[in-house]
Length: 394
Image 1 (spheres, rainbow, N blue to C red):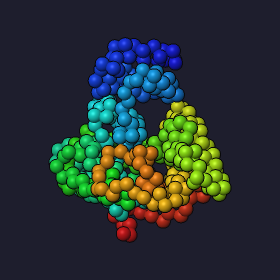
Image 2: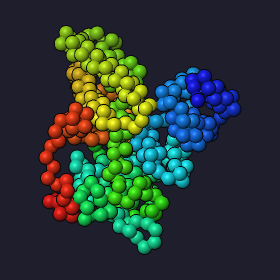
Image 3: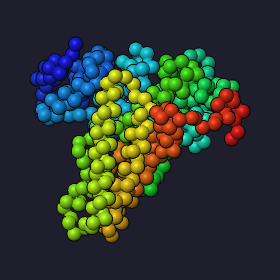
């Protein structure tokens, strides 16, 4: 059994063989993956050692102390948090060996082709079609929207309708799409922040070989649930230090700018600080539960809290700063590869946090998930559940 002492020994062997000060960043990351120290709970040969997930912190602490480079997880969050666990659970051995290593090292960025203009909250109503092509493959036509990092991605996880005669949840298949293939067009969607971190993606006659299908034909909704559950944990349950995330900048401003303080703002900041700390510790508990298996619907609650807290904290920060909070540094149209909540000013945080209650599942949908799948409350009536997709009203 791999324990903490064994992981420390293996990490020190990696550092001795690939000294961070003299080893190229990518070479070090590849060596770390091959040593099974990328995500220790993954199987041997796929970046892990089959060790308990909780022991990843042992490796990370040793590497951080040695000044080793990381894989810039914010830039490749969709690959790490959504694509990788889905490929691990449903991918073939060939798919796992092809995709997981460059995904983890950041050599290949991933995006998510799920939402559509007519299928956002009701994702199962999606209309992008995948039709069997001559030979061993599929031809995909449709449009996806709100696609983070599509402009930087090499690969995408894609769900498409393969059987319109089946009810909407049962006629979907899950694919891996090459974003460089002919017929894939990415257009920027400029946001309220001035940036275009999101995109819309048009798929016109895109050919996908059947070897890039994940799971069985028509079973894509079940595969997608793995992606969606992991997505909510990745967004709402990320590991943070105390005063990490949005609460950090406002707490720092409070300490450094006593002239801005009022009694009312003090009371509100105290309440939000406590809630942020509760959310952080709850996230730690959730990650401990993940060590025993795949994430469940509880991640929806974490993502709900993440969105609400971010919006309340950023609103308080703008109010604390007064007229300064209304300033905005730069409306230049940019297409960033990551979202940096703490690297810019309060106005950016306030505007960008508005998207937190939409992305990764709207708060309204997540409330339903918590009600039905966590609390066991009666489900809302769904008259279209057993109706063929082609017969649904649009």
